[in-house]
Length: 284
Image 1: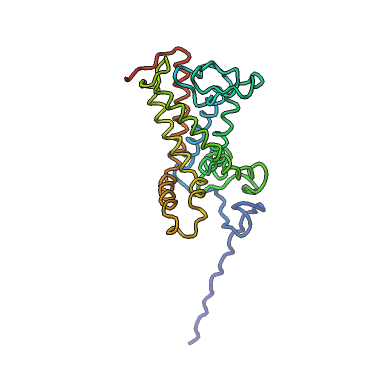
Image 2 (image 1 turned 180 degrees about the horizontal axis):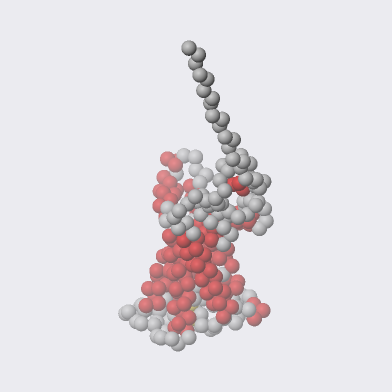
């Protein structure tokens, strides 16, 4: 009895993959996925919040830097204007007024002061991540491709300037020291006698604690303390300091935001006092 042959059905050819550009996640050799991403969560929410927060701070700090007024209310001086280095600063009598740069061409002295703390923050590793994602969409979120056709990282101008972060750190430390001095002066009354504490004193205390915590949690600070040590056992003091800074570094993002808000709040509080909106409540 003859056996009837059965025909094997032909396997259809796989669909042709769509043409791909020459770079990025859609380059040849990568998975041929037409969708920009496969995420179903609200991945856009975090970069949107980050964008809003940073944008509001930029707008506020720009306004205050060019205002050149309402930055001193005895015994408080705005952190945006300290130390006062130009002779067009308001007379602070026994306050931190050094008058080293003449009239500073009639411009606000804050334009000179803010370049150092802002340079420190702009080149900070966390802030790079924040504004790369929020402003440049590079990338906007994990597993979401960036819209740029090319990516050169931080190897070309202007992003290669991010390597100046360690030098801005060296400038940020004395700035934090000056703000510490301002906080000590905040314990004086209107006649410049110590023993006073107002609501503004608490605002300055919170601000300087957060400023120091953010500054010391910097990656450059951690590397400076223990980054080049080969044997921790031979340097117990530096090792202990390195572990302390490492614990702060774990909270670098939170400290970055908290200190950003606190420095703006301290400046705004001085502005309200100097503009006559209300008087500083005396605690003792």
